[in-house]
Length: 229
Image (tube, rainbow, N blue to C red; front, side, top):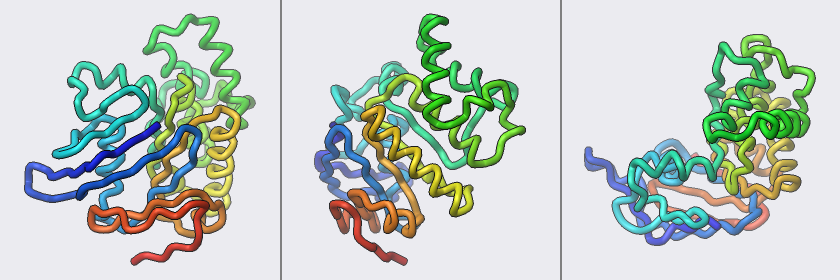
């Protein structure tokens, strides 16, 4: 479960990014986070993955009180979550297999288990035939699939997808959403997806949380069309 309790965030330069956020996401949910630029979406993600600490309140992810973690404990915590960004962040000199395997190698997974799990996730994301390809030999949509495969390799409880379709055309964006739906169902992974693409939100209806100027201004179950400037 993910829980924000009275969370506010003020940066050192005096900017207030979030105000008294109370938010609960249950295991297995698929939730969109939407809002205009400057609404607090990026700060919310940084609080979830441990890059920032709340100025007030608590951020709980599973058994972790993320804002209270010592800096040295943050890498251990991140083994329990997966994060996907819009710019892929693949290792250019490693193959598809090696990129996904890397996430397992850094936590000392036995080699036999690595091979098995990499095959599983590449099958799930539809890239078995690209096992030995390098990132520059893949389309943007395929690179994002590799990034997603790497993010779920450790079977995270929560997958945070930060604008995962931001660099993709509408057809590839549709494929990525449908892949995330499959991961949500088959891997029973909680999905938190930040997006600007209201068309996707309206087409693939999920619980939708809207932020504006650091406040939660809407929390709609199963979607519904939301328009913001």
